[in-house]
Length: 223
Length: 233
Image 1 (cartoon, rainbow over the protein chains, first blue to last red):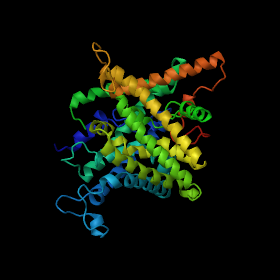
Image 2: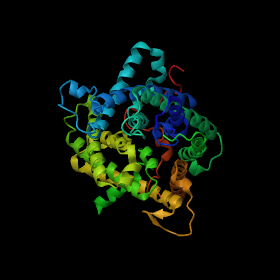
Image 3: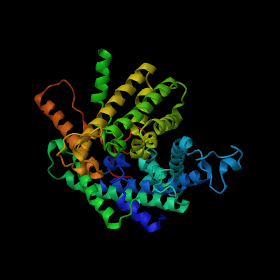
Image 4: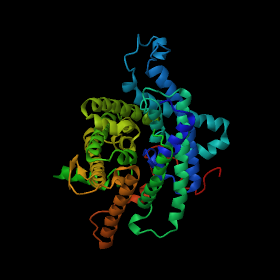
């Protein structure tokens, strides 16, 4: 099944929401949602990095780690590093290490560029950037869009993977903002002592995830 | 006996999931059954043990400025090895269920956290002990959550039906159930801690769940703690 941009967006933002359905990025979700301003800043920083990371890892996957079926371009072969690609490429052995390095370098790079060229944006997002390297949502989206894509017979194009990364960021930000709203209310309400703070946050997340389950039946696009 | 006590202390008092709130993503994602939980715990503990050993051995050679990058490369190498072993050795269903969470061990804060906080400052044997203790704690937490979710959600244990007449509450093995189960377990441990405190048994400090929530990661935590307002806001 070929998947379109709208389906990809609905599937990534609402149905298989990164946080609420896939359990990715829970550390910032619980740690940085005490205040809405923090949640928004973190959300936008993740959205930014996730889009870039999906784009770069998709290029890496397509042109370095795997060989196109019809003998298309592969960087390792073109540079003469390897004579020919093995069946299945180098996905299994190089995927993890190359993706994490790309993400780490990318985060550093974004931080430097922002600091030099867009100081306003850097001031708003800068403090969240170092946290993103080990945010599993970024790496998770990169994996889901390339090597762990659900329909291996119909791989996503580079543009589609990038779009999926952006939508993943939107879904993450949506969950962060909703959660911070709930937690700001919870802070002033009477919660049993044992459940205060983190436990009640998890239970509220569960109820929110329950609501998001409904989207699956509404559109029926399983990603 | 002393060694065993130290290990247990590490596994219970500094439990990575319920005490330090680290590694939450795999904790929720793979605990749909006890079997998945145990395989995940084994994979993560193997990576933790290997990375702790190597980083502890290399601690005098790794330059301070690039230490995080070095740790990540070491961990990523071991994660790849574990992934290949899992592909060959674990049942196909388990591999399908764990999916991306095996490669995602590389961004698991427990492993990077132990590398930074313990292995880079301690000798080989202490680091091995640390890895075993923390690994046991992680396995225990995952198994506990997996046990609750599997028994409630599918009415089975390790795939065997427990009580024939029971209608499983499938919610527990779905995404919302994971959040609710872990929230209630956190609450339970808090309640036990509070009770102990109230009774005045000074045997041990209860696990402080609430305070560690501010620190999702051991490394690169750049949130300004002193300034209440976000800069630029």
